[in-house]
Image (cartoon, rainbow over the protein chains, first blue to last red):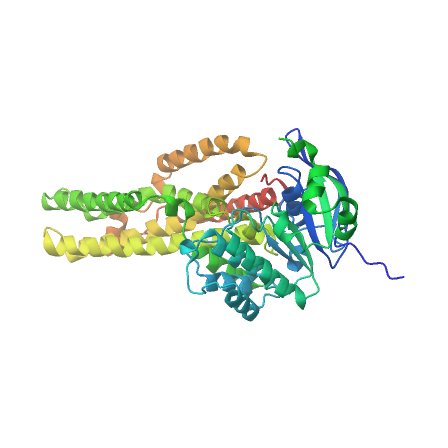
Length: 239
Length: 259
């Protein structure tokens, strides 16, 4: 039987900010080739996990392997990453942003980026300063999807974005996923719109993974993601 | 990283990409600042012209503007890094698949190139202004203009030569602010302000003067920069220290980042 190497593996991974654990002895193994929803309430460690995976921050303890290697700038060659609360250079046009991608992101397909832009209704000549948050989010998502990489990480890609942009982004992603073999990690609060996208789910709380597995299995046990949240995050739900 | 990619990184850093903080300001605030800068420049030109008309200005004194260069370099170095945070682009920048030394090194080189460009512009503007004063006000000769232009060259050469240490220290200062070691940031600021004061007090003897430039045109021309050897050795030592500062900044961004 062929053993598929996990795309991300954490063993007793910890990261502290002062006395507070953002990641608290996290044990997690995420299989390759899945669309993974990393879900949980604010401050549960989702963004910290993504930052550790991309080498933005160094964990205090434990072991982390990404694509079989310790994370760092070298492994970022194989990752498309949309940081949490990210923005783009205001004086760039969308085309200049994509040219930036073609210059610095290995495997970036400029033509694919232009195709995505047309599909997502992004004006290539418009400057980012003149765009709405939703339009800017589409540009940034294209920057993550245009490189030919095995792993894409999207940290809250729908935060603060209007319904139409969210729809455009999700349909763009579905279109993209049709012909690519890629693992995608997505953290989001907007579970209702994207629940159908996920085929693997990681539920986090207080820096730990409290449940991880196939989304079908989770739904089979607890119903919709809405119900899952109500069951797993009683404390937050009751606030 | 190959040279071509590094050159592209430097080019990316060289370009002005805008500031969200400035965009968020009202039009009145933005134009108010522009007006303020224009008024300052006009006041400078007005004062210099007034003293020139009254015969109280020696053209070489126009190089007094160089006194602002070290402070400009500090601001340039700090903003180079801080703008990534202000614009919300630090995540993109720091997850590029290149070492932190390359990333911060590209910012450093771009800042240094901007210093060279600003120095060239200042040199041309001061030279032109000296020429215009000579033509319009009188009391100055063509030789005065040439000597002034000559005196400016070594002065700006020294600014450009010593700018790496100030730029690298500014980048290091800005880096400290985003790390777990930000508590040391105020101490470093006190250090840099103290260092600049010492620079102004102690460096006078090493600076080129108008009279040396004047002598350059005499029958027995002397050097344009006093203690040239010491200045060059100092410059090389400052480059080594600048490299160390950049390495420390890269290490901090790699291991001590706090976000």
